[in-house]
Length: 382
Image 1 (cartoon, one colour):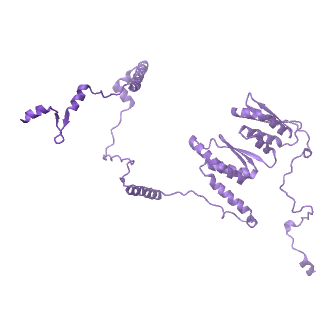
Image 2 (cartoon, one colour; image 1 turned 90 degrees about the vertical axis):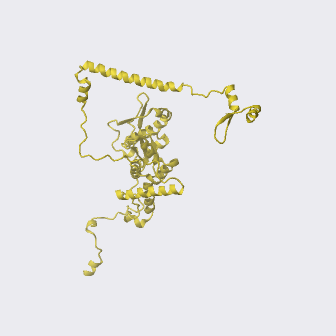
Image 3 (tube, helix red, strand yellow; image 1 turned 60 degrees about the horizontal axis):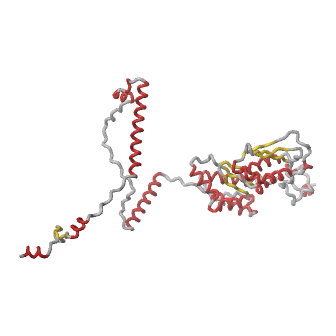
């Protein structure tokens, strides 16, 4: 009896009632999603009609009119009817009696959303597949400054679209940056990664950090030994360094000293000409400053306080008109300055030219003396 008990293997109490399944082999993919066929719909025709509508911008109208026949053909295969309303600028999809897949109406809704956001029909129709989903990320209200928003949105695309292409290759997604939204199509897991990259980029975290992390993850996934281990030790940890005030001051002083040395080496003045002069310190007095007069006190001094309301209004209107007249005169004078002829030097007359010609400047004392005839000079010498 003891030998028989030793031969029996020890069975875990949680797996005591499990039976062997000879039909369940390792070559079966349990995660495979089989396409939904009309035979799979056991309920038959839908009782109620479901519909979705979305608006599209004016610039998409021409393209949608050209490809609407292709959109209708794609949706007809799944029993979905579609309508293009050019008057109100909207697209709508609805179920019909031929619809057999209850989830396809949501896929059709995503299709018209992507078409409205600028995705081509050849790419947008892939969202009707079971393993493809879409996500439209709104980025318009994440950054207030318009210039900063444009720069960060361009950072997602990168130089010549290199950053966007890298994200697409690593996540197996299609990404379109259009206006205030980013349209993404791909597997469910990858959509989450792309949303994280886009939102972080709008929060001033460069996409290259996420791209580097995704590349490391892809390489680690190839190693079966690391399937049950934590990958934290391999992933980079990017943290922003917060410097103390003293450290910032030291760095600033080092930069200033380096600039001064460079100026000295170049033979320039070491003092910085752009540096603003500090205002002179005021003499300390223990007495408080004199109290400024109130608005009512000023009105009492000028006599405005005792005026009636209509007189006060008339006075304000008069002062306003006077200011406007002064400003008009000033502007008129500025405009008239353009038409004032510049002062030109008058051309010398014949007499002035003759005088200049007969005048010499003595090099020693700088005095001028006129030329005389030889006879007069000889007479003076005699």
